[in-house]
Image (cartoon, rainbow, N blue to C red; front, side):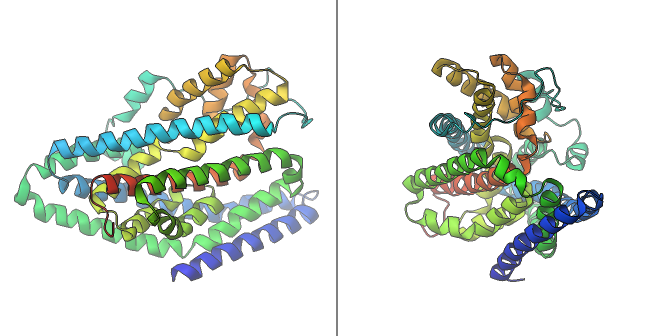
Length: 410
C-alpha cells in the first residue's frame, strides 16, 4: 500500500467512523445497541495495537544493539547519550512551562460550570511507582524475556545498551551476528508494512467506538477546554518545529512532511506506540543513521513525551480553575518541578498522564477526584498528546543526528 493511499484511507476511516458512531449513538444508546457495538468494534482496535506491540520489542532490541555495536567505543555512546538527554530535559521544561502559560492565558476552567465530583471520590487510577526509588528499580529488568513479554521499552533499552556495548567490543568476530540482527530489524519493518494495511480498519473502529459511546455532545460540553488544549498543542508544535529549525534549518519542514503518516496514525489511534515502527523508518529515510535513530527514538518514548508533559500542567491547573482554587505563581512553578520529576517514571503505565496528574494534585490541596472531570474526554486529548510525542521524538532524533554529524543530506 503506497504511503499516499494509506493516508487517504486513514482519513476516510476517520470520517466514516464519526458518521457511524454518531448514528449508533443516536439510535442505539437507549436500547443498549451502542454498548454492544462499542464492545465488539473495539476488538478490531485491540487487534491492531496488539500487532504493533508484537513488533516493538524485537524491533527496539535489534535496531538498538546494531546501532550501539556499530557506534564505536563507550565514549561515543556516552557523548550521544548526554546530547540526547540534554535535548529531552530542555524540551520537557519547555513543554511544561508552555502548558502553564497557555492555561493561564486561556483559562479554560473558569466559568465552565461542570458538575464537580465529590472531593472524596476515587479516580480509580493506580498511582504507585511514581517515586524515584521505584522508578530506578523499574529501569533494570529482572529478565529480558519478562521485559519483552510486557513490552517494557525502558528495560529493553537498558539491556540492549549493555548487550550492544559488549557485542561491539568483539570487533570483527561479532560482525556476522550483528549482520543477522540487522536483518532481523529489516524483517520486522517488513512485518510492520503488512500490519499497516490493517490501520484504516483499526482507525475506523477506534473513532466510531468513542463517538458511539459518548456521542458528539460531549465535544460541545467540553468545547472550551478542548479548543484551549488544541490551541496550546498547536503552539507547542510551532515551538518544537522552531527550536528544531535552529539546528536543522529549513530541512525541519521536510522532516515534518515525512512524519505526516506516523503523526496521523498516532493521532487517530491515540497511541504513539502504534507509530513507532513507521517513525523509525521515516527518520532513517530523512537521513538519520540507524545507529543514532535506534538509540534516540526508543529512549525518547520513555523520556521525551512533549505532548504529555504539556498536558500535565495544563490539565492540573484547569482542574484547580474549575474548583475555584487560586494558585500563586510560586505554587505553579513548584508544580512544574514536581511534574518534571514524577513524569519521568511513567513509561509503560496505563493512562500515564492522568496517573501523574492524580498523584500530583493532592500535594497542592486539589482533590484528585478532579481527574474525573476530564476522564470522559481523555481519548480526544490523548489523540493530540500522542501525535505531539511522535513529532517531538522525530525532531529530537534528527537534531542529535545533526549534532553527531551523522545526518545525510546536511
